[in-house]
Structure formats: C-alpha cells, structure tokens
Image (cartoon, rainbow, N blue to C red; front, top):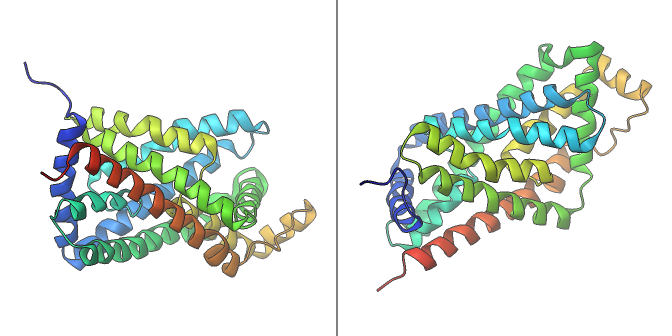
Length: 273
C-alpha cells in the first residue's frame, strides 16, 4: 500500500531536484513568481493586522495571528510562487551537486527584490487607498505602532529572531513537500509557521509589508496627526531604520536559519557515498 506522504529522505532528494530547477528559471519567471509570493505574504500580514488591531491582550492577538498568517505560506506553496526565505533550502541542491553557489545566490537576489516589490505594492495599496481607515484610523495607528516597534528592535535581537523564524519556515516548506495533495501540503506548512508567528519571530518578507505600510501611513498627514494625538512616537520609523536596522539583520538571520535546515537535512538524509 502506497503512503500518502514522502519521508524525509524522499523530500530531501526531491528538493535537491526542485531547488536546482529554481536556479534555472528565466529571470522574467523568477520576477513574476517572486512578486506573487511577496503579494501573498503581504496579504497575510494585512489580514492579521486587520484581525487584531482592536485586541488588547497580547496572547489573544498572537494566537489569532498564528491561526491566520500560515495560510499565506500555504498559498505560496500551492501556487508555486518564489519566496526568498523558503529558497534558502536551495543549499540542499548545492550540496548535492545539482547547482552552484553562484546560481543559488542569483536566485536569491532576484527573488528577494521581487518579493520586496510585491510586498510594497500591497503596502502602498493598503496604506494609500483607505484600507487602514478602519475604526476612524485605528488600524493605521496600529500599523504605525507595529512598524515603529520593529524598527526599534536591537540588531542582535533581529538576527536571532530572524534565525529562529527561518528555522521554522524552511521546516514548514519541507513538511509541506512531504504531502502528496494540496490539503496535506498546506497543513504541513501550518504548524511551523504558526509557531514563528505566535512567538513573534522576524520574517524579512513579512517585514517588507509591516514596516513599509507603517512608513507610508506615517507620510499621510491625517495618520501622522492621529499618531501625535495618541502620543505615538514615530522617531524610530524611518527608511534608514527599516532597511539597515531591521531588514538587513533579519535577512541575515533568515539566511542563517535556512542554511542550517538545508545543511542538516542534506547531511542526515542525502550523505555523499
């Protein structure tokens, strides 16, 4: 009787081929699928912000986020979109001799920038065209507060929180690949991603939406006035803090976490003879 899932050895061998194929895709395809992934992750961010902006107790808010956000990765997996954090597993393909480090980095750069473009599109749409107007701008206030808090995270914390995040995201990708149908793949990704969201770990593509939406909201006079009236300091919410204080260290942590999972699975399940 055939199994309805792939075991870890089968998944690792399968990803060695899939990861190599990712590095061979035309630039135009990587850009479009990368934008799609950025949009899907950003929709997950927008949905969770909208669901929790009125919730005061942290444990309820984090749990609601943990229940909703994982479906963003589920959509990425089901649609075949290209997500930078998941593509850190291409390290399996490199170690298996299916592609080169240069080809992997090429994929990362194209997909990362495309994810950024997709997330910015959603952030601009939500912050610039009224989606943040819920409860007389309270969603905008929450979005700016969250963005400012992320920009204030110490660099070393951002690296470690990014590391933990992508340990879980890449495990989610592997667990998703173990399923042989769409439901199994989406459910496989669910728990690891729910864990990282509930714990508040840092995901670079998610932050491309969270902080960008806060920055765009800050630039709107009505939202900036609302922040001032509520005593919300936005001094940390700057482009420089976004890029260098949060996105760079979180991305580094995400890369390290993803590489650790890729190397571990290759070493344990696909050792060289």
